[in-house]
Structures are given as C-alpha cells and as structure tokens.
Length: 380
Image 1 (spheres, rainbow, N blue to C red):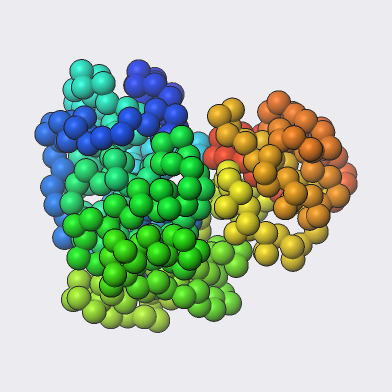
Image 2: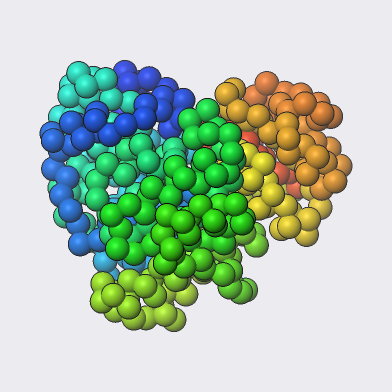
C-alpha cells in the first residue's frame, strides 16, 4: 500500500487538535481504558523522557545508541514535522503507512467512544505497535508534564529529565517549582533515573522527590553532529544513561561505540541546515524563551542576516525578542518588536530571501513553522 499521509491525518482529525497541549486532558483513565484494546506489553526496557526542552534530541540520540548496541527500539516522540508517521519509529524508521492504518482501524472506534485526545490515541497506537513488534526497548517522550501525561500511564524502568523551564503554564502551573513537581512524576516507579543540570529551584524539587537523583554534568563533545552547545548536555545525559544501563546489566558495556552513535545522530528540526544555492537556512522548533536561552550561546558564534520567529497561534515568543535582536541584521515574524510582521512562514521566506544574494536565515517558533519552511524550500 502506498503512503497516503492525508488519509492518516483524516483519521486523526476526528480526535481534535494535534498539539499535545491544545487537546491536553489530564488523567490516565482514558488512556488506560484504551490500552485494554491494544497489544501493548512490558518490553525488556521502557524509558521515559520528560523535561521542557531537549526531550526529542535526547530520545533520538539514545535510540540510535541502543540500536547500534543491537537492541530493537521503538521510539515515540512528538510532535511530528511533516507526517504523523514520524511520531512512531521502529529501528529509526517512521512506521509504515499500512501498519499505521491497520492500527487506526482497530483503535479509533474505542478512542472515539472513550473521548480520548489526539495525544492519548497516538500514545496508545505507539504502544500497540511496539508491543506487536516485540521491541526490546521502548523510548517514550512525554507530551505535557508527566504526572497526568499519557506516557506515564504505563510502568517504566528508567526516567531521564532534560532541562526544565517555564512552558505549558496553563496546565502545569506558573512557577518552576510547580512545573518541576509535575515533571518529576516521570520518575515514579522507575528503578533508574538521571537528570540534566537544573537551576537551583528545580534541582531542589527533584532532590526532595528523589534524594538519590544524579545530575549529569555537560561533557565535551567536539565531534557532535547535532549543532549547538546545548546538545552537548543532551549527549552527556544519554551517555550517562547508557552507562547506568550497562552497570545494571541491561546492555553490554561499549562506551566508544556509544559515543560514536551519539556523535553521528541526525535530529530533524533541531538546528537543521538547508542550503539552496546561495541561501543557508537553519531551522529549529524552539518555541519558548527557555529554548532560545539554550540556543543563544551557539547562535552568537554566527552572523545571521535574518532571524524569522513565527509561533503557533496559541504561543508567543515576545519575551525572547530581546535575546535575538543583537544576533541579526533583521528580525522578522509574529512577535511584538520585530522589524516586519508576516502571517505565514512561506510569506516571510518569499519576502526575505532574495534571489542571487547570499543570505543566512534562522527560522524559529514551532514544528509547524519548521514544516512550512521545509515545504517552501523544497519548491524554491
């Protein structure tokens, strides 16, 4: 059967908005009821990844290293960039259209009856597919928080916490303490847990909940293909996780191989560089000030002719404009205080990228913005 992503999108559209927060429904009752209709089973290892930023990058690096170590890996991330299939990966490859449609046909009636959300249904589908394929390791990236997130409705063996900052305040609370408390629930029931370095307010919360929690210092990764100093922190967290897994006898010890795998992991939508003639366009889904702050030290090392910031309609990066302004000749997009406002990424790219002129542009704001920019660049 040929790939027809619109058919899958049409199935999923019955559930509402695709953003993990726009249709967020706290609680585990619906997902647990839906899981009764799946083939989900406890794999040899199940790993949760929660935090504010860096979850996807950490998940991709960890999946690659475990695959290279000989494990069969199911990877569940969100959101997708171009196709829903990207959320559910088997051995690094987005799930086949035929398998995805078969799973939808079985689970959608129950999902609709239970009034499950888009994210809950996607999570159930991932667990169903991973169970049917009998993968060795499942890696589940949390959507919103952790306490009531669909990914914590099933038991796990390890939890990894990436840097925690302000985001999803509508659901998680307006303070770092409240948000950290929610995200710390990813560690519940896990025999193994690690955290990236956190600000003091967050670290205090995590230590109170798990006094033995180890915070992983950022190491030096001179050959890391994932661009940006912040990615060195994600890589260090992954390496520490692999060391812990090996120390517990879950995988053979092979640090040189792990490092090679981590260094060569390609991460879509995270400082992804697209070259079209004399244009150099960098794409990153950074959508909150916390993410911009993480990118800033690396961005300062390059000259940007244009930075485009275009967020989703329910988000804002107005508070990050001051961080970006010194980095570029021209700041455009949707926040307040930019040089020129645009309604869509396509409109901005068409207006700001001049034929025959060498330009370096940075595109920020969301995975939706990244997807639209990729599509426009493919046709340019």
